[in-house]
Image 1 (cartoon, rainbow, N blue to C red):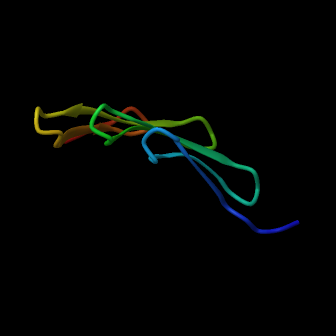
Image 2 (image 1 turned 90 degrees about the horizontal axis):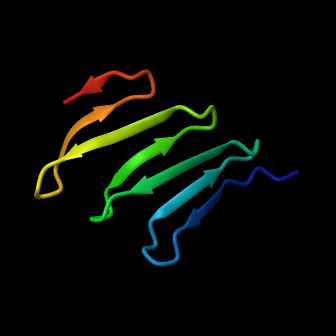
Length: 71
């Protein structure tokens, strides 16, 4: 069994979609209209959400997988 990490990308944007590590653990990413990461779901299903962007696409707050909001 190889020790390969697989990176899959969205075809239309070339943004990273998912990462599968050598133990078959999956991390998934979603993006907003501007191509900034919106959510990251880790292999345990925890979601980190980059929820609030300014009009110029600057990140204002991040809600981590434990539900804590950071600015």
